[in-house]
Image (cartoon, rainbow, N blue to C red; front, side, top):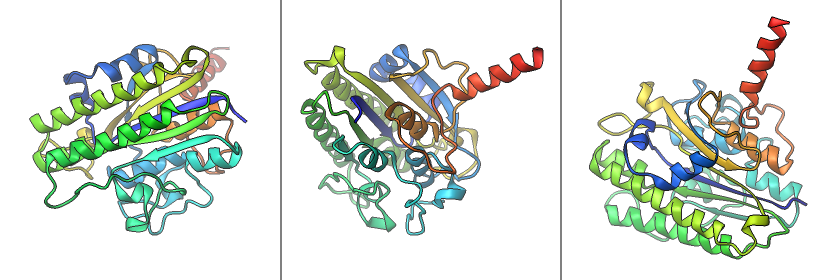
Length: 296
């Protein structure tokens, strides 16, 4: 059994340059305690949500998990499980929660779910005919449900939660990288703040071991949309604080697969044979060791 608590927050479609331009005090607070660093979507996959999130939660690349778009029908997940399912198998009794306003992550829609056990999906309008208020309401439902879970955790059993916020990506598709897009990035940061306050207000928080990771899957073109190879679409980012997270990620060498890799590292999870994800900072340390060997 583990007594480590893991909170992974996915915010879909947030360009790194736009993130740096708008007010995001909650994400900034995580960066101040650990790091915020850009990461390029691996060239093995297009800049699409399905393959990026699959890589982040399994730690293997698209050639292995076989998700190349937003259809999960042919996904090879049995031998490459998501970190929540892997934690449940490895640590029976660990407390888990998954919430997302994108159906394939948590339901059978489009060949899902990506997370084997499914999860919470808000009962809100989505797709054609939905409005910006619908997008706000759905993400707020996800955040509120996660906060309820976080408040009720037992300290001694350990936990792992995945919280997915969809609003910025929807705004990017509908309106481009403009005012509405920026509004949803700031709103997502407010919801990150809600989650962090809930964690930090826990009665025994100071004695608990926490890992918090926040990440995005891809960027957007200026006019909205993604899937191409432009720098703005292919540059994503990861922020993290807590258990064994290096402070100041300015020189970190990262892969999106390291999200699953670091979760596995702190929870003591077995890794798929083809896993490329590792602990944050491991690539930098390996490169430094190689330089030292060459000098000696």
